[in-house]
Image (cartoon, rainbow, N blue to C red; front, side, top):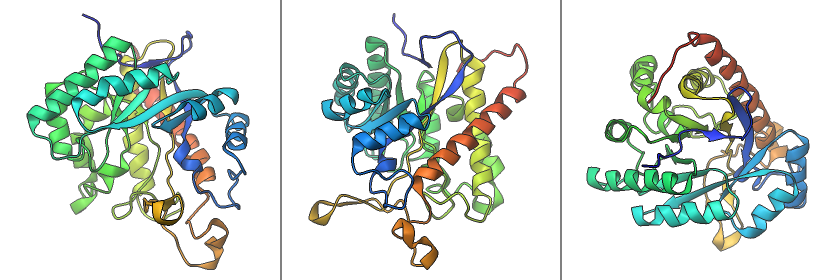
Length: 315
Protein backbone atom coordinates (compact mmCIF):
# COMPACT_ATOMS: atom_id res chain seq x y z
CA UNK A 1 0.00 0.00 0.00
CA UNK A 2 1.25 3.49 -0.85
CA UNK A 3 2.39 5.38 2.23
CA UNK A 4 1.59 8.99 3.16
CA UNK A 5 4.40 11.47 2.61
CA UNK A 6 6.55 11.96 5.70
CA UNK A 7 8.95 14.72 4.62
CA UNK A 8 8.96 17.46 2.02
CA UNK A 9 11.71 16.91 -0.55
CA UNK A 10 13.46 19.32 -2.91
CA UNK A 11 14.60 16.73 -5.46
CA UNK A 12 18.25 17.35 -4.64
CA UNK A 13 20.79 15.34 -2.69
CA UNK A 14 21.92 17.92 -0.15
CA UNK A 15 21.78 17.59 3.60
CA UNK A 16 18.38 17.95 5.29
CA UNK A 17 17.74 21.65 5.74
CA UNK A 18 15.32 24.43 6.54
CA UNK A 19 13.64 26.21 3.65
CA UNK A 20 12.97 29.93 3.93
CA UNK A 21 9.31 30.59 3.06
CA UNK A 22 6.72 33.23 3.95
CA UNK A 23 2.98 33.11 4.48
CA UNK A 24 1.46 35.88 2.37
CA UNK A 25 -0.69 36.95 5.32
CA UNK A 26 2.50 38.56 6.63
CA UNK A 27 2.36 41.06 3.75
CA UNK A 28 -1.30 41.91 4.31
CA UNK A 29 -2.03 45.39 5.56
CA UNK A 30 1.59 46.36 6.04
CA UNK A 31 1.91 50.09 6.81
CA UNK A 32 3.91 52.21 4.39
CA UNK A 33 6.78 52.47 6.89
CA UNK A 34 7.31 48.70 6.73
CA UNK A 35 10.28 47.47 4.75
CA UNK A 36 7.89 45.03 3.07
CA UNK A 37 5.38 47.59 1.86
CA UNK A 38 4.98 47.84 -1.89
CA UNK A 39 2.14 49.16 -3.99
CA UNK A 40 1.33 45.78 -5.56
CA UNK A 41 1.58 42.11 -4.67
CA UNK A 42 3.86 41.50 -7.64
CA UNK A 43 6.30 44.09 -6.31
CA UNK A 44 6.17 42.43 -2.89
CA UNK A 45 6.83 39.01 -4.40
CA UNK A 46 9.84 40.39 -6.26
CA UNK A 47 11.11 41.76 -2.95
CA UNK A 48 10.73 38.35 -1.32
CA UNK A 49 12.79 36.72 -4.04
CA UNK A 50 15.48 39.39 -3.74
CA UNK A 51 15.56 38.92 0.04
CA UNK A 52 16.24 35.19 -0.24
CA UNK A 53 12.83 33.61 0.23
CA UNK A 54 12.25 30.39 -1.68
CA UNK A 55 8.49 29.92 -1.48
CA UNK A 56 5.24 31.54 -0.42
CA UNK A 57 2.24 30.04 1.30
CA UNK A 58 -1.20 31.10 0.10
CA UNK A 59 -4.50 30.63 1.94
CA UNK A 60 -6.98 28.96 -0.46
CA UNK A 61 -4.70 29.62 -3.47
CA UNK A 62 -6.08 30.55 -6.88
CA UNK A 63 -4.61 30.76 -10.38
CA UNK A 64 -3.83 34.49 -10.22
CA UNK A 65 -1.88 34.36 -6.95
CA UNK A 66 -0.03 31.21 -7.98
CA UNK A 67 0.90 32.66 -11.37
CA UNK A 68 2.23 35.83 -9.72
CA UNK A 69 4.38 33.80 -7.32
CA UNK A 70 5.78 31.65 -10.11
CA UNK A 71 6.59 34.72 -12.18
CA UNK A 72 8.66 35.95 -9.23
CA UNK A 73 10.54 32.64 -9.13
CA UNK A 74 8.95 31.45 -5.89
CA UNK A 75 7.70 27.95 -5.12
CA UNK A 76 4.17 27.47 -3.82
CA UNK A 77 2.67 26.06 -0.65
CA UNK A 78 -1.07 25.74 -0.14
CA UNK A 79 -3.14 26.20 2.98
CA UNK A 80 -6.83 25.69 3.65
CA UNK A 81 -9.61 24.55 5.92
CA UNK A 82 -11.54 21.28 5.74
CA UNK A 83 -14.63 21.21 7.94
CA UNK A 84 -15.45 17.59 7.12
CA UNK A 85 -13.28 14.59 6.16
CA UNK A 86 -14.85 14.40 2.71
CA UNK A 87 -13.43 17.85 1.92
CA UNK A 88 -9.80 16.85 2.46
CA UNK A 89 -9.01 14.95 -0.76
CA UNK A 90 -10.56 17.49 -3.17
CA UNK A 91 -8.76 20.34 -1.40
CA UNK A 92 -5.40 18.58 -1.58
CA UNK A 93 -5.93 17.64 -5.24
CA UNK A 94 -6.92 21.21 -6.15
CA UNK A 95 -3.81 22.67 -4.51
CA UNK A 96 -1.61 20.05 -6.15
CA UNK A 97 -3.10 20.94 -9.54
CA UNK A 98 -2.27 24.61 -8.88
CA UNK A 99 1.36 23.67 -8.34
CA UNK A 100 1.48 23.71 -4.54
CA UNK A 101 4.19 21.36 -3.32
CA UNK A 102 2.82 21.17 0.23
CA UNK A 103 -0.65 21.50 1.75
CA UNK A 104 -1.24 22.51 5.38
CA UNK A 105 -4.71 22.14 6.84
CA UNK A 106 -6.99 23.47 9.51
CA UNK A 107 -9.29 20.56 10.33
CA UNK A 108 -12.75 20.65 11.84
CA UNK A 109 -14.02 23.05 14.47
CA UNK A 110 -12.76 21.56 17.78
CA UNK A 111 -16.08 19.90 18.66
CA UNK A 112 -15.25 16.55 17.04
CA UNK A 113 -15.75 13.21 18.76
CA UNK A 114 -12.84 10.78 18.77
CA UNK A 115 -14.50 8.88 15.92
CA UNK A 116 -14.79 12.08 13.89
CA UNK A 117 -11.14 12.90 14.59
CA UNK A 118 -10.18 9.44 13.36
CA UNK A 119 -12.16 9.96 10.15
CA UNK A 120 -10.17 13.16 9.55
CA UNK A 121 -6.89 11.33 10.18
CA UNK A 122 -7.79 8.61 7.69
CA UNK A 123 -8.76 11.25 5.10
CA UNK A 124 -5.49 13.18 5.54
CA UNK A 125 -3.27 10.11 5.28
CA UNK A 126 -5.19 8.72 2.33
CA UNK A 127 -4.99 12.03 0.44
CA UNK A 128 -1.28 12.33 1.11
CA UNK A 129 -0.62 8.78 -0.07
CA UNK A 130 -2.95 8.97 -3.10
CA UNK A 131 -1.51 12.21 -4.41
CA UNK A 132 2.09 11.83 -3.14
CA UNK A 133 1.62 15.22 -1.48
CA UNK A 134 2.93 16.32 1.93
CA UNK A 135 -0.20 17.13 3.96
CA UNK A 136 0.45 18.64 7.37
CA UNK A 137 -2.21 19.25 10.02
CA UNK A 138 -1.87 22.62 11.74
CA UNK A 139 -1.92 23.04 15.51
CA UNK A 140 -4.51 25.79 15.78
CA UNK A 141 -7.24 27.06 18.09
CA UNK A 142 -10.81 26.52 17.01
CA UNK A 143 -9.88 23.36 15.09
CA UNK A 144 -9.53 19.66 15.77
CA UNK A 145 -6.04 20.15 17.27
CA UNK A 146 -7.14 22.82 19.75
CA UNK A 147 -6.85 20.54 22.76
CA UNK A 148 -3.36 19.19 23.46
CA UNK A 149 -4.48 16.10 25.34
CA UNK A 150 -6.85 15.01 22.59
CA UNK A 151 -4.20 15.73 19.93
CA UNK A 152 -1.70 13.54 21.77
CA UNK A 153 -4.27 10.75 22.00
CA UNK A 154 -4.98 11.21 18.28
CA UNK A 155 -1.29 10.85 17.43
CA UNK A 156 -1.08 7.69 19.50
CA UNK A 157 -3.90 6.21 17.41
CA UNK A 158 -2.54 7.62 14.11
CA UNK A 159 1.26 7.80 14.39
CA UNK A 160 1.75 8.54 10.67
CA UNK A 161 0.23 12.03 11.02
CA UNK A 162 2.58 14.95 10.42
CA UNK A 163 2.12 18.55 11.55
CA UNK A 164 2.48 22.21 10.76
CA UNK A 165 3.40 23.66 14.16
CA UNK A 166 1.85 27.04 14.93
CA UNK A 167 2.80 26.73 18.56
CA UNK A 168 1.49 30.08 19.73
CA UNK A 169 -1.96 28.52 19.68
CA UNK A 170 -0.87 26.06 22.36
CA UNK A 171 1.61 28.27 24.20
CA UNK A 172 -0.97 31.03 24.65
CA UNK A 173 -4.19 29.06 24.43
CA UNK A 174 -3.09 26.42 26.94
CA UNK A 175 -0.87 28.78 28.96
CA UNK A 176 2.07 26.38 28.88
CA UNK A 177 3.84 28.46 31.51
CA UNK A 178 1.05 27.97 34.09
CA UNK A 179 2.37 27.29 37.58
CA UNK A 180 5.97 27.62 36.37
CA UNK A 181 5.58 24.21 34.72
CA UNK A 182 6.77 25.01 31.20
CA UNK A 183 9.47 22.32 31.10
CA UNK A 184 7.13 19.63 32.40
CA UNK A 185 4.42 20.59 29.95
CA UNK A 186 6.90 20.91 27.08
CA UNK A 187 8.07 17.33 27.62
CA UNK A 188 4.52 16.09 27.20
CA UNK A 189 4.31 17.66 23.74
CA UNK A 190 7.13 15.49 22.40
CA UNK A 191 5.01 13.05 20.33
CA UNK A 192 3.69 15.99 18.30
CA UNK A 193 6.98 17.90 18.17
CA UNK A 194 8.68 14.78 16.76
CA UNK A 195 6.21 14.86 13.87
CA UNK A 196 6.56 18.52 12.86
CA UNK A 197 7.53 18.98 9.21
CA UNK A 198 6.45 22.62 8.71
CA UNK A 199 6.60 25.62 11.03
CA UNK A 200 4.44 28.72 11.15
CA UNK A 201 7.05 30.90 12.80
CA UNK A 202 5.38 33.21 15.28
CA UNK A 203 6.08 34.06 18.91
CA UNK A 204 3.37 34.70 21.47
CA UNK A 205 3.31 35.10 25.22
CA UNK A 206 0.95 33.67 27.85
CA UNK A 207 -1.61 36.40 27.15
CA UNK A 208 -1.18 37.30 23.46
CA UNK A 209 -1.03 35.06 20.40
CA UNK A 210 1.47 37.24 18.45
CA UNK A 211 4.03 39.60 19.94
CA UNK A 212 6.97 41.67 18.78
CA UNK A 213 10.32 39.96 19.27
CA UNK A 214 11.67 42.57 21.70
CA UNK A 215 8.94 42.05 24.29
CA UNK A 216 10.21 41.36 27.83
CA UNK A 217 9.81 37.94 29.39
CA UNK A 218 10.70 34.30 28.79
CA UNK A 219 8.55 33.60 25.75
CA UNK A 220 11.17 33.89 23.01
CA UNK A 221 13.46 31.51 24.88
CA UNK A 222 10.60 29.05 25.26
CA UNK A 223 9.88 29.14 21.54
CA UNK A 224 13.53 28.50 20.84
CA UNK A 225 13.27 25.35 22.96
CA UNK A 226 10.09 24.18 21.24
CA UNK A 227 11.48 24.80 17.76
CA UNK A 228 14.76 23.05 18.56
CA UNK A 229 12.79 19.97 19.60
CA UNK A 230 10.79 20.13 16.36
CA UNK A 231 13.98 20.29 14.31
CA UNK A 232 15.53 17.38 16.19
CA UNK A 233 12.44 15.29 15.43
CA UNK A 234 12.70 16.20 11.75
CA UNK A 235 16.43 15.46 11.57
CA UNK A 236 16.16 12.04 13.22
CA UNK A 237 14.31 10.64 10.24
CA UNK A 238 15.24 13.06 7.43
CA UNK A 239 17.10 11.91 4.34
CA UNK A 240 19.19 13.86 1.81
CA UNK A 241 17.03 16.39 0.00
CA UNK A 242 14.42 16.65 2.75
CA UNK A 243 13.53 20.08 4.08
CA UNK A 244 11.36 21.65 6.76
CA UNK A 245 9.60 24.86 5.74
CA UNK A 246 10.03 27.87 8.03
CA UNK A 247 7.04 30.04 7.19
CA UNK A 248 6.51 33.14 9.33
CA UNK A 249 2.80 33.94 9.51
CA UNK A 250 2.54 37.36 11.15
CA UNK A 251 -0.97 38.63 10.70
CA UNK A 252 -2.43 42.13 11.01
CA UNK A 253 -5.19 43.29 13.28
CA UNK A 254 -7.61 43.41 10.37
CA UNK A 255 -7.84 42.06 6.85
CA UNK A 256 -9.71 44.27 4.43
CA UNK A 257 -11.71 47.43 4.91
CA UNK A 258 -15.24 48.46 5.77
CA UNK A 259 -18.12 46.10 6.46
CA UNK A 260 -16.32 43.20 4.81
CA UNK A 261 -13.24 43.44 7.03
CA UNK A 262 -12.12 40.40 8.98
CA UNK A 263 -10.91 41.29 12.48
CA UNK A 264 -8.06 38.96 13.39
CA UNK A 265 -6.54 40.89 16.33
CA UNK A 266 -3.12 39.27 15.86
CA UNK A 267 -0.99 42.42 15.65
CA UNK A 268 -1.94 44.40 18.75
CA UNK A 269 -2.08 48.16 18.06
CA UNK A 270 -0.48 50.54 20.55
CA UNK A 271 -0.96 54.25 20.99
CA UNK A 272 2.55 55.32 22.02
CA UNK A 273 4.15 57.65 19.51
CA UNK A 274 7.25 55.63 18.72
CA UNK A 275 5.08 52.98 17.09
CA UNK A 276 2.89 55.26 15.00
CA UNK A 277 5.06 54.68 11.94
CA UNK A 278 3.66 51.12 11.82
CA UNK A 279 0.05 52.18 12.18
CA UNK A 280 0.13 51.34 15.86
CA UNK A 281 1.45 47.80 15.28
CA UNK A 282 4.14 46.92 17.83
CA UNK A 283 6.82 46.22 15.20
CA UNK A 284 7.48 45.83 11.48
CA UNK A 285 6.06 42.40 10.72
CA UNK A 286 8.24 42.08 7.63
CA UNK A 287 11.43 42.65 9.60
CA UNK A 288 10.17 40.33 12.34
CA UNK A 289 9.76 37.58 9.73
CA UNK A 290 13.43 37.95 8.78
CA UNK A 291 14.45 37.78 12.44
CA UNK A 292 12.34 34.66 12.96
CA UNK A 293 14.21 32.98 10.10
CA UNK A 294 17.50 33.83 11.79
CA UNK A 295 16.26 32.47 15.12
CA UNK A 296 15.00 29.27 13.53
CA UNK A 297 18.33 28.81 11.75
CA UNK A 298 20.16 29.12 15.08
CA UNK A 299 17.85 26.52 16.62
CA UNK A 300 18.46 24.17 13.68
CA UNK A 301 22.20 24.31 14.29
CA UNK A 302 21.64 23.45 17.95
CA UNK A 303 19.32 20.56 17.04
CA UNK A 304 21.88 19.15 14.61
CA UNK A 305 24.68 19.41 17.17
CA UNK A 306 22.61 17.75 19.87
CA UNK A 307 21.80 14.64 17.87
CA UNK A 308 23.89 11.59 18.57
CA UNK A 309 25.82 10.50 15.44
CA UNK A 310 24.22 7.48 13.84
CA UNK A 311 21.01 7.82 15.83
CA UNK A 312 17.89 6.78 13.93
CA UNK A 313 14.28 7.40 14.77
CA UNK A 314 10.92 6.75 13.18
CA UNK A 315 7.67 8.14 14.54
